[in-house]
Amino acid sequence: MKTLKISLTLVLSVFLSSAFCQNMYVADKILGTWLSENKDLKVEIFKKNDKYFGKVVWFMCDPKTPNMEDFKDTENPDSKLRNRPWLGMQVVDDLVFDGNKTWQNGTIYDPNSGRTYSAVVRLENTKKLIVRGYWGLELLGKNMVFYRAE
Image (tube, rainbow, N blue to C red; front, side):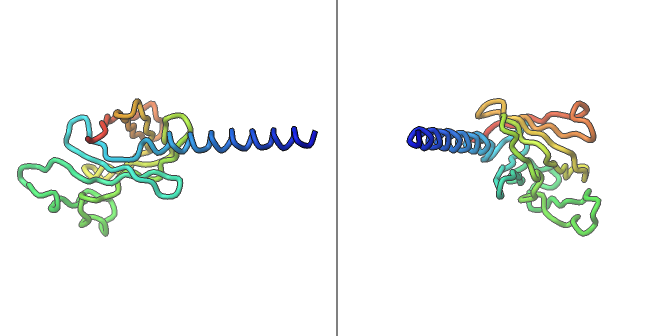
């Protein structure tokens, strides 16, 4: 009987650790560089602890200001941040994987408007990411589509 309990405990432990590892593998599928549907923005998604973040690594410049390094966060409501560059700016914060190809409870920042929105991100497949920014209710939000950068 004691051997049966030990065997069951061992099998259960292996199963649970395998499920945990599989869940972490799925959660990390969001990592990498993503190109917007309009091909005008690249965001790199990275992980710190158990949360996911994103930073701008490339964007198409306005012809009047052709250098990415010259774009500043001029619309930020915090005047102390208005001189920070867009390039390298963290625009996705604190996403948490929910276990079902969805990351939520985070925010996205729009440097064009200076506004921060609640965010939910869904991995449609290994190459397509749907980012939904919203205020209040997710139902009232807007989707942005990103494709894995090659």
